[in-house]
Image (cartoon, rainbow, N blue to C red; front, side, top):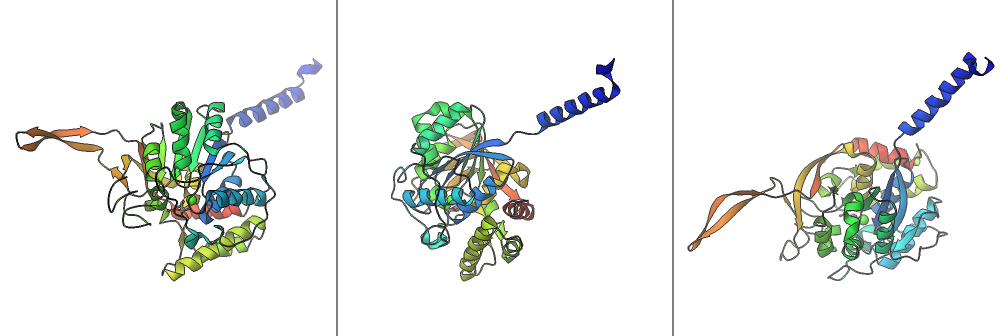
Length: 350
Ligand code: BDR
Ligand code: CA
């Protein structure tokens, strides 16, 4: 029969093979980036926009490195640079939940973007950032990964307004905290220090999976002259911008005797693209909100146990230990060179 000729069967087999391999391809993760852009935020956003593993559903802006207003403009400049005005960029909170805002132009340049001027063509989405997060989580139940790389104000507002989103969020991968000291002071990391109350809400919200990408690993991912040179070797608008940001941050680092600058927010995005870049341990993490020297510290219980002290007359007696349930996976190690190579190759467009 003409229809079942070997050539036709071969063709059908080929079509089937193509269809099966398309189905076998992992679908890109749907992510929402909550950010306070910010130099390293900018790099994290550009890394995401250049990576096939993720589809950015929205960028929500939180005050932190710069004011809410400047952060929104910076996010729009970045989507303009990447030619991605299709991505909703929404403003959110105007200040932390219970304290004054602390901005960081000292580290990020007076415009938050290493003093590099970029044009804006994209327009802001009129929705309130936390409401947009709520809307998208309901629209894509169990599919959204939240990637907060700034203070956790917007995420805390979203879960406080609508706690029903918590079990519908696939994963939270946040840049913040540390279990071996801070970068603001001895104890606290900047994102957590900028809104400790919000951070405590987020760590205790009950997310099924929360990965804390903190200083312990971020400090090992040093962007150096080598990465600047690799980017300069492949000129283009995005690579040029990232090389300029890198140069700005490196100049700053040298003033403090360092030869490299940590890629905090890009690493959180790197972990979103490829979780095998880091080693994590399950821990119970709480945020100190009252300590005189430790406000904003992420207090991690490495053994997930606490002593059970029972009052007997005028003293307590330890009668045993109780387990505490971990609420986060804390990154404790990172394949730093592999991550830096990934960052550079994606920014170069490869
Ligand atoms: C974090 O603080 C901000 O300055 C950076 O953008 C990063 O998110 C590092 O502590
Ligand atoms: Ca940030």
